[in-house]
Length: 409
Image 1 (tube, one colour):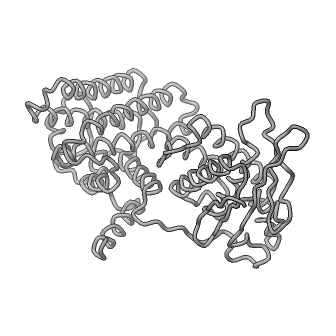
Image 2 (cartoon, rainbow, N blue to C red; image 1 turned 135 degrees about the vertical axis):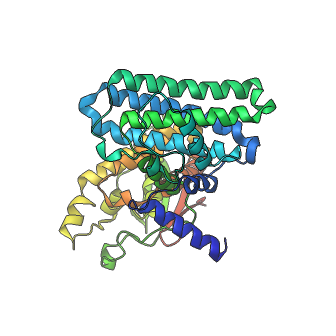
Image 3 (cartoon, helix red, strand yellow; image 1 turned 90 degrees about the vertical axis):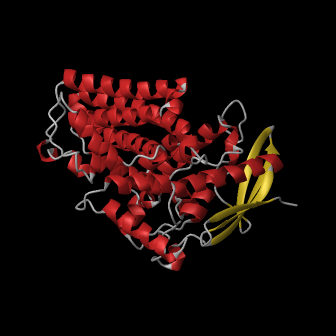
C-alpha cells in the first residue's frame, strides 16, 4: 500500500467517524470493495453476494418484526435493526458494484418508480444516504403494524424475484433485468427503513465500523492496558509456562508451572466424559499474550493494579475474573463442536459479537474483533498441540502479541 492509498483510507475512515458529514452513497459502495473477501472478481462473484443479501434480508425482517411486535422494547431492538440493515446495505451495494451500477445511479432510478408512498427524499439527485431520508428529524417510532408488515413482505418479495431471475439464467441473457431488480430492492429497503424509523446513514456507518473492526486496513494493536502502571503491576512481557499432565488416583490432572512454581491448582476436566478441559488455561495465556488482558492470570500471578483502586476493583476484580472464565468455558465448548477449530481461518461473526458483548464496560472492550479472533484461534492452535503431546511449554510475548508451543523433553 503506497502513501496515497493510505491517505485515502485515512480520509475515508474519518468520514465514517464524522456523523456531521453525510456519508456518500458511492463512497460507501467503494468501501465494500475494500472489505470484500469474495475471491471471485466482478460479475463472477455476484451469486455468492446475492446469497449473502438473501440471508441478511431475512435477519433484517426478523429484527424489524420483533421491533414492531414488542413496542415496549423498541430501543433494545433499534440497535439490532440498524446492524442488520447495515449488513443488508453492504451486500446490496457490493452486488450493484459487481453489476456495474453505482448507488447514485440506482437512487436516481428509484424516484421514477415511486408512486404509492409518502417519500420525502430527493433521490433524483441524491449523493448521500441523508439525501434519501430528508425527514429523519421527525422519526418518533415505527409506523403502524400493517404498513410496516406490507413493506417487509414487499422487500422479501423483491429479493426473491432477483434470486429467481438469477437462478433461472434470465439475468445472464438480459443484464437489464438485474438492474431493474436492484432498483426495486433499493426502493423497498428505503420504504422499510422509513417504516421502521431508522437512519440509512447510521446503518451504513455502523456497518463500516463493524467491518473495519473485523477486517482492518492496517492492524493496530494499541497500547497494553498496564503500560502506564508500575512495572511490579504489569503482566510479564514474556512468559514461558509448562503444562504437565499427571495421573493421580486414576484421574488425569494438568499442572501449570511458571518459573518452577505451580500456577493455581491442578486441573481435571470436571465432567464424567473427558474432553481435555484441564488444558483450558491456555486460553487465559492467549488472552494475555494477544489482547494484553487476563484478570485470571493477574490473580494467579498476584499482579493486580492496586495503585489505582478503581482499576483494582473493577478491571482486576472478581467479576472481571468470572467473565473471563465464562468466555473461556464458552469458547471451549463451542470450539469442541467444531473440531477445536482445526483448519479454520475465520470465526463466525455471531461468536465474536457475543464475546464482545460479554466484556462491555471493561477495558478489553476496546480491542477490535480481529484481535479477539486472533486470540481465540491462536489459543485453540496451541490447545490442539498440548492435547496431542499431553504436555508442552507455552510461551507468550505481549510485545509481539503472540503465543507459541514447544514440546517438553
